[in-house]
Length: 439
Image (cartoon, rainbow, N blue to C red; front, top):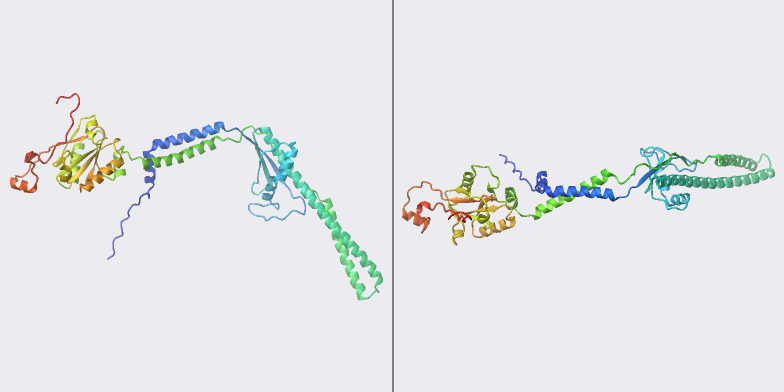
């Protein structure tokens, strides 16, 4: 026989509703932080100076045989490494050339981007004035092309010098070989070897001559500007959606954190749900919600069902709850002996306790202290009653009882000295006299 599976015990914090509950309870703090964040974003938008961005598009072209090979990928389908060229366009050398073109004016920082699968550089400059942004963007583009052309010409000149030096060396070796051929007898092995060497040197000289002519005639075209920067008509920053969205998001995060912190630190009981959530006591009745006609009967039934004995101690929190209540007491009757704590023996005789919690007048810390104080005297708390204006006042409830001999009552200890045996099942709580009403 297989054992039944273990019941799934819900873990605290496992449900999304548990995390959203503090936000629902502290919605005012959350809404205030969101509004404050949006207002801060709009204020930042208002005080941030406008800036303008101009972009120049440059088509980069190969400049000769000295170009390094680039691996063709999905990101880069051209033979040129445009990522490297973008870094060159942002270098200090290009910035110095752009400053010279601007007649010594300090240029703004440049941003260079490369669209995928293209050989185009987007050179963007952001400045406080539209004309300045367009001028500096064009200056950066021209400085980059000039720097690229200069490097290409320098590299080609170096290659030309290298090829020319090799060509002169081969020609000198050819001359020496020809002179040696005249001294060697025809038909001999030395003559054949020298002739073969002359033919190889002649081919090398021809290749070097072709190489040199190619380097001298190659066209150096570093690139061309295909999109000249124009003064922008609208500012690129600040942007309303960015500032407002950032402010609202920051306010939302701050509001959520503040709501959770406030919910953790605030122990004041404002609703019946707060009593159950912060103290763990079951709420037997909620007198803060009007319109329930069967509330006294339901409260009496809940109290009788929860009380383990016949003597119930009713504890009001705060102690002046009856005095400060502006409404008439709510009459509740139950077949129990109700103790209000006025007698020094009430705490020792009570079988259970019922707390009357005044909403917005007491904290969960005070309720927990009262529960601990009662627990030290072995008085369990069966629950709480949430009250605001209407406070329950218990009255005697006479029920039909079978005849019990006086000796049995004395033996059980249920007979009070100063109260008849027929009315010991219930005692009325002391109700203070209202002002302006006759005694």
